[in-house]
Image (cartoon, rainbow, N blue to C red; front, side, top):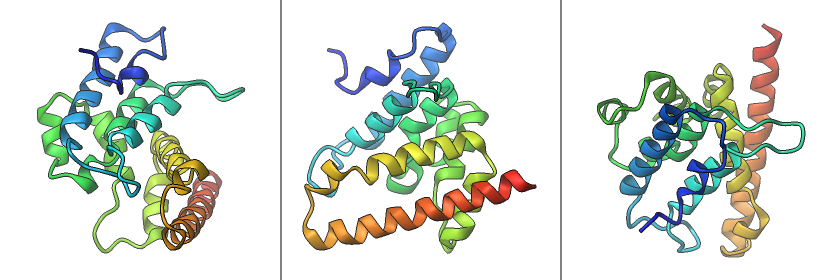
Length: 176
């Protein structure tokens, strides 16, 4: 039976077989890693990385679809923070260093300030794409409407503040 979350592996048709395999491998790792997890609204957590990856795999007006490495990282973007999976685990499972670098960049490190985190993301253009897709999904009004008022207010401010920090970090990175 096909996974209901496989849509981001099939959206882009001009990828090579190796690129499709990479995204499928990332999908499979994410599904296993997030198995049994629920989001704040009680839905299966894998829906979040699925939406992030699908958004990245799709062109949006004048913005082209992200490359397959970013789509793979979209699937994997929360496995380091939210599961026992390590970067080395990803490497052992065949994820290339280019994708691991993106996943590492979007994974918050213990003791890291939001500004430091944003600056680290801004240093990797594909990590910026992944984090923006992540924030877009996290801040989606329809998703936030499913949590209590206090949580919705807290998350709305948290995501808006980080978008501003990331935008400033990207601006500073571009000025270098």
